Image (cartoon, rainbow, N blue to C red):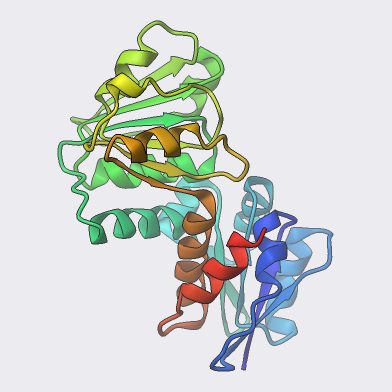
Length: 259
């Protein structure tokens, strides 16, 4: 059985601590609260296969503590999966790739898409970069104020239009009406039912968000995914990075829907 630590005090980490692998291959062990860097350094010594990391602050600390990082982890300054290789720790940020894979598996095509994000954070930044690299044409990041939006908008490939916009900006309703994909990490805008349709996909990337977007988009024939489903699928992708092989998402979905 491979031991995998859960680092961070995020509710997702607490929920996953109840996971019991039906095949007996993996044991998820919550690390006690404390210094993330110390926990990362202890992984090889204590015989752990690696760790899953939750929360922006914990992910920044873990990135700084790992021996090596993937290109995504280095560029964003965060890691959500840490694998042990001998005496070394290798950090990666897999959430953005997992989200894009899930969208494409469901038939959603990023090429030429118009994306809007409500709120920032590492998951939003990484996902916007991943979508831009996959061919998205227009990206708008909407934050409580313009300086916050400008700071949160990631560097984008040439040819991709990027806009950083305050939530009170008069262009926000138009941006939301025209987007194909909406990423939510904050409750910064409410949907207008007459502007929604089956073209729109909504992903909730943080817990506790108001259900209004999901309800209205589904009623209009679009697709909306709640945070527990997102968290389960990205945690499964991180586990695959740490332990290898296939990791079923269904047991994780059951746990995270109970939180």
